[in-house]
Length: 104
View 1 (cartoon, rainbow, N blue to C red):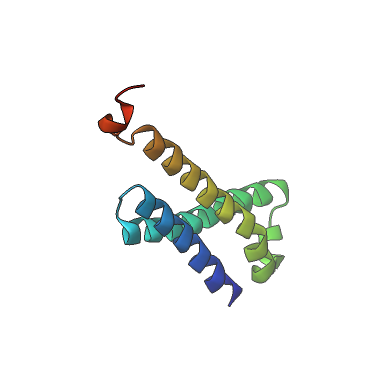
View 2 (cartoon, rainbow, N blue to C red; view 1 turned 90 degrees about the vertical axis):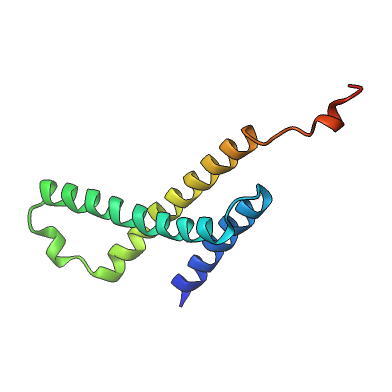
C-alpha cells in the first residue's frame, strides 16, 4: 500500500513539472514511475553482484522484503535526479517572452 502512495507522489510531481513547461503530462508521469523501477532494478543488480563477489552465496539468504527496503532510496534518488535534470533543462530552454523584455 505504501508503494502505491509512493508511485502516486512520483507521478504527481512529474505531472506537475510537465504541466508547468507545457510537455506531455501523462507521458512524463509514467516516465517518472519507470525511472523509479529502473533505478531500483539497476542498483539491485549492482548490489547483488557486489554481495556475490564479497560473500558468495549470501544473496540466497537475504529476505526479499529487506532487499526491497534497501533498494527504495536508490529508486527515489533516480527519480529525484531525473526530475532535477528535466527541470534544469526545460528552464534553460524555456522561450523568453519578447514583449516583457522591451524597455529593460
